[in-house]
Length: 456
Image (cartoon, rainbow, N blue to C red; front, side, top):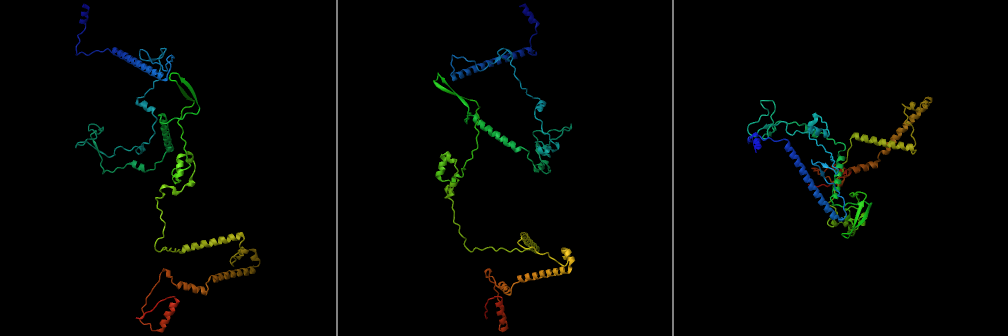
């Protein structure tokens, strides 16, 4: 008792104002022990749950109670510090994947950014705010943009609103960039098509994996039978050497399209709905527009001629200019000359003699003209006279005979009554002279005029 009093006297009386001194080692040890106990409790619960599930699976599969099998799982073993160990007490090492949280390490792990020209950055990154803005506070007093004590700018607060002065013109270079030519990079559409194909493939595989569609089993498979004595049933197990793969849908090209089947007779349409073999036949020969259901509702009126006379619009003649007529005449002459030359080359026409003149026969004949120039000159003069005579004869042949001239003149004077009749009225004060009467009569006969006179 005395020793206890001595110890109490040696200790200082505890006060509520004194700071509590905590031992740094004791709480850390308690925390570790608590974590170990919690981990051991979780491991025990997990092992109990796994054992219960395995017991349920073995009961469903109908395994005999007498036969003992090893568990398909490995129990989780922990040491006093909560670390995983194997059956021999050795530590199990796990590969720990490091997660980079430092900004420098994260930037180093990411792929390098594409280099960008700083002078062309305005084309790809449009400014988020107008270039010319006025910042004002929510109250009536304006908020300064810079601190008067220092040169550092003051950012506008959340209560500030942005006022844009529309009177100040804005020049945005990115608007011009939009109007410029935008070239498509090589392989852009191929990548889009590949992405779309991968997406459709994932959709199809997802449909088979979820059970909505049945998988086609591989052709090479082995079947084993086993009798279950407890249930009295025979179980058939199939094992395939190849994995189960979704079927590849081949594009089927029909022999006859569905929109063409509407033109078939009703009996054949019904047969194609029932029989698959009939669908594979090409029956375009039996198609008829009268077999379609809506044909009887379409009216086909008989075309009638319009009432009244059919007046044809006269075609206005096209008059060529003097230059165009000359060009056309030249082209026709060249065509005739070409045709004549071709006939000469084929031997259908004789080759004409060279065209001699007094100015060129010395050049054409050469030594013959030097030997006897008088004879050659006489021959040239005869040829020239013959050409002139032929020219005059052609002109005489092209001239009209007196009878043709008279008929041409009469045809020109006669009026075409299909286009209308021209009428003129004359008033004569004195028509008693026989001379004037004779002139009027002869003129009317010559110009094919008809008319009558009335005395007033």
